[in-house]
Image (tube, rainbow, N blue to C red; front, side, top):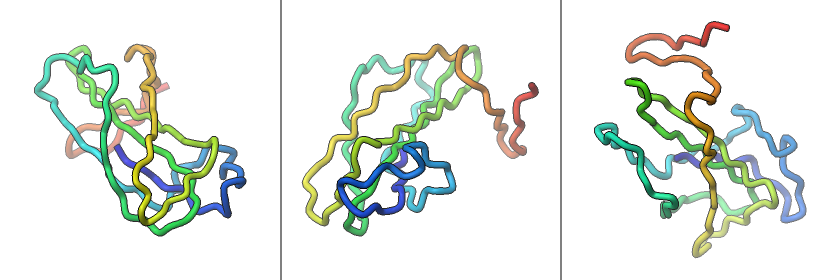
Length: 133
C-alpha cells in the first residue's frame, strides 16, 4: 500500500484538486506504507477487516490524501495484480508534527476477478504487453 500525497492546499475549505480524480503525474510524494506478500498461500484471506498501522514524516500543511493498494490474487493458475486507488476527497487533512492518529477507511471492491478490466500483462524480464482489443 502506498500513500501518494497530492500537492498542498490552502486550508480546510479548499476544493479537491483535479475534481477529486488526480492523474498519476500529479502525485508529488509516494510513500510505501505496508507490504505483505504471501504468494505461497493457497487461499485468499478470510479477514473482513484489517487495521494496518503506519507512520509518515511529512512537512506540515493541508493535504488531500490518496491510498493506492495492490492486491495480488491467484486465479486460474495465474497471478493477478488488482490495483485500487482510494482518494479521500471530502476534506483535506491537516498534517501536523504531533498528529496522534488518523483512520483512513477503505472498502475493497467485491468485483469478481473475471469482471475486472485488463490493462495489460507483465512478464518477468520482459516488456509490458497491453491487452489486444
